[in-house]
Image (cartoon, rainbow, N blue to C red; front, side, top):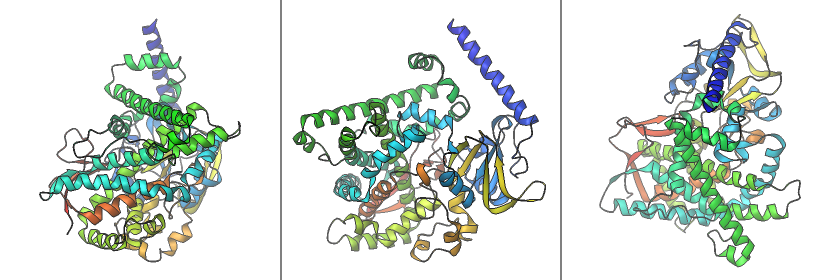
Length: 544
């Protein structure tokens, strides 16, 4: 019986592939007049280039050659759009955001990995969750978190001091940024300590699991994109788990084990927090965070919320996994990239060190003083502009829609195109990378890392573009109702860590060539690393 079921699934999959291929190659598409790179393969199109871990040059060359809206031929001949036209982006993420929703594969994948949190919900359920979460990410609450952020970062500083007390030493910085980002979200987000951040400390299993999540899931990009939404409808959860255990696919088993760690840790934390709340204020006050952490505030708010606004147990658990992963992986990537850039731009590092040392003479900086340090802010903004941790995100149309363009493009037939009719169920790729680097908006030096650009008025073209990003004319944190809810939290993490580390240490390149992989979230490795494991070796010494 089981073998027959597998054969039926295989036959369905093969038939589906044939149907998709013939349908897309022999039926006319409304997107046929949009220029784009020719497909390299009848099966893959340009899919393997767009999502190649070394695809940086392909994305740049494609944007420069074809412009702000590009037709992509995806798997099995499917036509998709690649967009970084500002007006089009405004319609996608703001004006018509409920037409352009996350793809089914994205939502179902996030539900399997994180549960029913912000990344795994749509529509009214998503809006309800954001309404509950918005207050805990307010600036007022960020101010309360600053002492916790400093306490955690001083542990990191002490660990580095111990390692370099006898002189300069190569340190694998990425793992330390990951451990620190996890501890920051653990203490300030959940009143929970994942990691003592000592030199000989053993990282919490959650840290290793979360850091492997994106690279491992990236290996499964094809089945996640084209099969997952169907596969999750087969049988019961227990039956699907049985199939996962049975299928001899290492990447699938690795992903299963990673998700188990994320889920079990979240359950452990939330049960501990609920127990403390039930025991009263004294018990909560004795926990890390003293009841001011995000989870404590969220649980209390949920207890008093109306039935219409109340979040279920599954939703509360989903927020934990979602927020922990989102606050850890992208921020550790951004911090690692900045330290790597500072190591390769000693003049910028020296100028930043002078600023944070001068500002910190009287002790730890308050929130408003820290976030307003001009050069520190410029370094962070320029990093998030040129090197966003996430390069692209996908949406899919839920109905036929017309997409207006801010700048006309020339069609394959030579005519100007001012708007594009897009059929229902068409995937649209938002290029964060191309929007942030667009020379027509940011100027001819848009591909150069220049923190100083933020210390002077931005070009008129930036202001006039009306880019719909929630942060600083950038698409890094998106915009509209699906914008990153924790972008202020992320910036605070980055600025506290950088202000302490750069004041205390000098960072220099090691003798190993560092390569950055797209991987869904930008991840460093080294050219001599045969297994392509994430790593960032830098030489660290006490700063004079």
